Image (cartoon, rainbow, N blue to C red; front, top):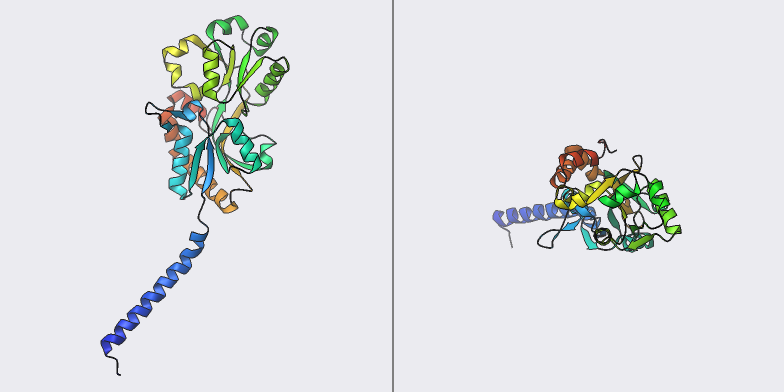
Length: 280
């Protein structure tokens, strides 16, 4: 049976469409097969970095950083709230892929990459009357055996402050708690006299009546640390680590990181906390 010219033309169009579809699938196949994620990210409550708003929704600098990375990179990041000690334990055991605002140590660098995005320095936070009684240095605090401190399990405060806490632990003068909100409540209740804290996580409260009861003392001015996105090398593919690093660097260059910090911090604290600013 002889085919009409119309049937022949339709057949050619169908073949061209099939060829185009196969070409698109061939090019898209590797990208689909190598999609970024899903990865599990451990979050922890820590003042302006992550806290619950009046509607009990998690908000803060770290959440906004992750949201921006998801939007820019297309990576699938599944977040879950944990204590800081459990996060580091799971990262080291290979049960968690990432965390936020992590502080690098020699031990942690053995299994994870650290991508910094802000700078912080811990200060001594004390009730005002106790700060005046203890004097202006750690040595005077150490000399009074009646004074105690509180620390969060899994936190690294900086080399000098970590050394001071080791001295206090040796004397049985440190209460260990699961997270920062608990530590803050222990201090506010008067059960301890000292908590080391980043001013940036306290910034919203520091401009209220709450601050009148407390004093921040800069005992370790050289003990600045960089807070980083932490990626476990055995869990996050090299290409995805490179992708996230590239987008985080772009956020630091194009001003998105500055916009996030300004959203939660006072102008002075923003300048001190930005990477490459006065704080680091």
